[in-house]
Image (tube, rainbow, N blue to C red):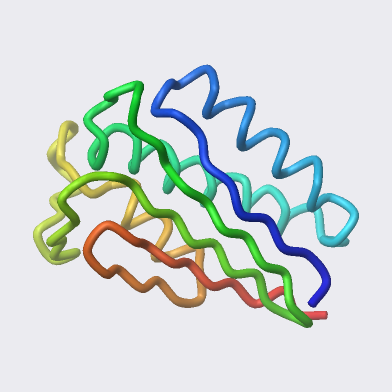
Length: 130
């Protein structure tokens, strides 16, 4: 295993911005492809912010937990919030509706090689192609 992080952040947007930035700075040495690093940053932002907004309802005493693992040629991003869980059908997303829920998850599912949703835990897996 090359890199492992487990931690959490309160559902506060300023704290989330710094939290994600710090994770990206930490994994920068492990990801040679800067385009992939940018994609990982986007996935992290979407999942952690979604957890804070939709899961925790921006309740600033609730946490969004993150586990990041870089192992051989993959990165595993696991985000857990303190909400009731998600029942999301990607087919219900309507790109013509500007306020349609699910845009972030559609984005992440298209960027990650695999997306697993289980209650209030979402795991994105991305091949790093080393």
